[in-house]
Image (cartoon, rainbow, N blue to C red; front, top):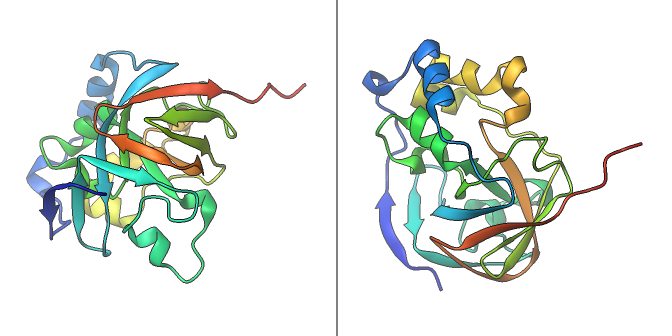
Length: 196
């Protein structure tokens, strides 16, 4: 039950669109504050192979397959803590600088605060009809990220002073199956109690 709205066969970035650290920092400060409790699902991307992307208008998430048809479920031993990659839409649009958000390789793009302070590990959210949980797997920029968005962008998302903002994104695992679609509400259901 996936409706493909676009398919991208190349995941190469355009170096002319790479932003400097100063431009990224200024852009981050200019972004509107992301919602903390209720946001929206802004994009769904399936990776059928390592270098292909399919933009979907809707999908059905499941604990077994994550996002069905995504290459995560095709691995010999898929890690449940790395089931769904999630990125904040505003940050992704800033870094992409006009390129398709599908280049990131993330599955879901949300208008929601993904910071550690707002969504600590173990937080549960409802996305459309599905329930997901924030996992402890760190989501860091890598050499592919650097090739697509530049060295400054890689340092920007991994910088220690802002690491807790999860600018590169976070991982979710599916707890309860359900349908999602672009525009679905994303609601925080629970956050773990702070350690004493």
